[in-house]
Each structure stands twice: as structure tokens, then as C-alpha cells.
Length: 214
Image 1 (cartoon, rainbow, N blue to C red):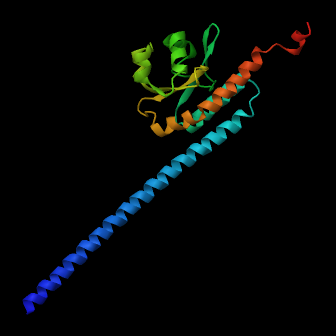
Image 2 (cartoon, rainbow, N blue to C red; image 1 turned 30 degrees about the vertical axis):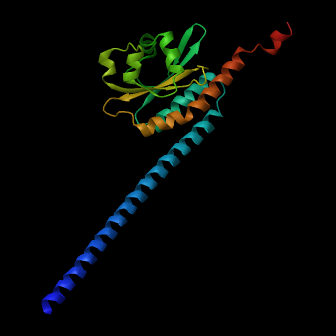
Image 3 (cartoon, rainbow, N blue to C red; image 1 turned 90 degrees about the horizontal axis):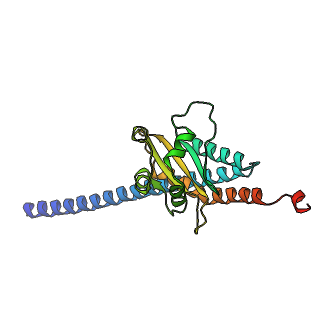
């Protein structure tokens, strides 16, 4: 009788242990889901905050050069230790804009101009995704290996539906590789930046009122 009671007691204890373990697993899963959801929300909030701040800054621009300076400045602030150059297509090829930081830069504007051809700039500008260094090399990038191995680099296209404007080249030291979350923020502002650039370029191409009356 005592043995049978002990067996029943052990069975009850075993079932309680299994139930408790299942509840513990469910709680752990719920906690992981909550942490993941919070992280995802924080990421989206950070992106939204950056995009809003970025567009507000662009609204204060007084011209194309000032617009590009502002865009590069905002990128520097949101991507730790990164710098950026804006490539814009032109009738005669392309222009490279690097905002002045007041300090020496390991990559100079004239070096960038040798890395890219007009065809490559046009191709990157029309891509529908961010281009990594590996992709840029496959497309024809001719950067010096001694420099390329020291930086993490990516290109954010500013073209859409075949209307190529240019792209933003973002780079920073190789020991701090550009992260997917960071590039996602930059991709989020590409459409607005493209429209802002196009509006200034359109204004520059229009004849002045004086010329209309000549």
C-alpha cells in the first residue's frame, strides 16, 4: 500500500515537474519574443527619427551645394565614424561632392574620380538595392587595393524607375564594418534626397526671368 502511494506521489511530482518545465519554456519564449519586439520597435523608431530629422534639415537648404553638405553632415552624425560622398550624374559625366570637415581625409575627391567611370556611376545610380564593395568591384570599381582593404564601403542609389540621379557612397574604417541596420536608415532617406536634388537641378536648368524677356 505504501509502495503504491509512493508511486502515485512520484507520478504526480513528475507531472508537476513536466508542467512547470513547459510553463518555464513558454515564459522564456514569451520573454524572447518581447525582447525581439522591443528591439524591432526601437530600430524602427530610430530609423523614423533619423528620416524625420534628415528631411527637416534638407528643408533649410539654400541651394544644391548646401543641400549636399547637409545630407553628408546628417549621415556623419547617424553613422558612427563614417563619411560620405555624393556622386551626381551630369551631361559631361559625373561630379563628386565631399563636404569639408576641416580635417584631413584619407580619401580625396580626385581619388574617387579615378575609381569610377561614367558608365559605372550610371549603373550604380539605377540599381534598386544597396551595393556592397564586392558588388561594386564586380561592376567595375577600380579602387586601389591598398585603400580598399582599409575601409568598409557601400553605395546607396538615388535613382528610381530609370531616372538616375546618382548615389551616396558611404565608407568608414574596415574594423567597423557598415551594419545592415545602418544602411537601412540610409536607404530610407534615398527617395527624399533624390527628389530634393532633382528639384534643385531642375531649378538650375530653367532659364531666368531676364532671359525670357530678351
